[in-house]
Length: 477
Ligand SMILES: [Zn+2]
Image (cartoon, rainbow, N blue to C red):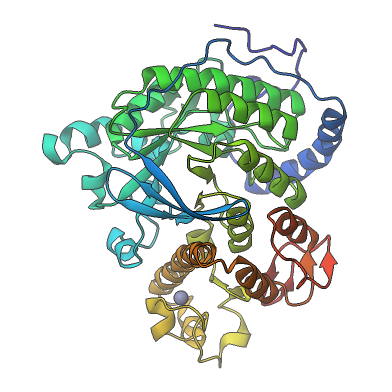
């Protein structure tokens, strides 16, 4: 095994030496804030003095036998409207993928997603491996003919599985990372049971689950981490992608996507993209974002990745789910998105609208008999009023289900709207309408800069503000 310490420097505070501790979210948030401040200086320094990495000298090349076809229908500068053909159905992109972590969505059924015409959803390798178990899904569930996640969920469309790499961050206090892989302490069994994920093991689990798109097992760290750790993780992810390609079975039945890492360092992202491209994978993801970075850094990383990723393959931005972020990044050339935010925020009574977020528990909705979003055509908006949710929210769990339905529909529909505008050559009209409604007073400067880079006519933007990121009914934040 090659030396992971290729930068030749001794590191302090390596996550390898962290012992598992009880998760304290408040403490974690405070720690994150301090980490962001500390690392801004590191990142600035790294930009002035870019380091280099040593990628593996003999990359594994993926054979051209993947069951994926990707056809671009129309473009607007970087943005694309495409059709991606996967084993279970055709997918129109750009697309938002709802997240069913353990083979089920929180609050929604697979038939709800069918009614929304959703063709691709996400499920989670780590959680499915714990329960019901990937071998159970492969060997026992429904017999040889009906095995796998699709039969388990009663879902006849496509499934993408993440690799378990993200849990290195989300369960960082319960995991220990090494060159071989990551050792987790099970968070559900309560007996300190160990689970070891390696690139080979992640491929084996995803082969058992039978997903249409399986993600590479990569070394995920927060984008605001120490720059040395970011370079290490990026190098390790390149070594791990070669192990993933080598160990992936069912290459003609399932599609393996590579994941570009590299934190906020644009030079490193470019190197990582070029390395990934050599491996000839059927699709690529931009990983390690939405981890506390500034919006200004966020869009620039997305932009450089879409600039260098191959034109003829799908591009997936992992874990990003705010409506404004989806719109901006689709215009920068991203095809696929996923995030739990739509359903998570619904559990707190927050709904997406074309005018920003609204909190349905707020007094202002008590006498509002209009729908959550008057422009939305979902089943919930066609039937129920904001006033109904105001009264029902704390009394009936069905309220959360209905708001989740609306939020997921909203994102699916937002992507469909952008797709149609690309095809009809009306992207400038869309951008003016969408962003003026989202930001009626002041537009965040990062949105203006990103739209300008995407080649959108930004003459509708009057006032910008560095401190505004999103808009909700209670004011800007
Ligand atoms: Zn709706």
